[in-house]
Amino acid sequence: MGCNSSSGRSTTFSEKRVEIYVAALRESRRSLRWVPTEQQTADAFTKRSPSLRDAFRKFATQPALALTDSKSAEQGADNSQRKVTC
Image (cartoon, rainbow, N blue to C red; front, side):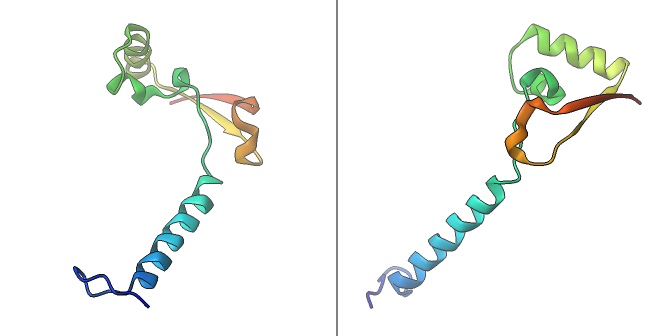
């Protein structure tokens, strides 16, 4: 078993830690869902797009949310939607 001189930890311990992180990332990826930019109101804060800014202004004055029913992450944007006004 090798030893990392800078930290005193065995390299196999470090490799196992990386494998655990990778496994956790793969598992969490399964629950991620893609949402089109047009449906992400906060994108107006991170992208320079007049249409996104206008959509955010409209949302700020007349908030409405789109709730999406989905069985799994693989369904993506093909889910049925319902509009909800706040």
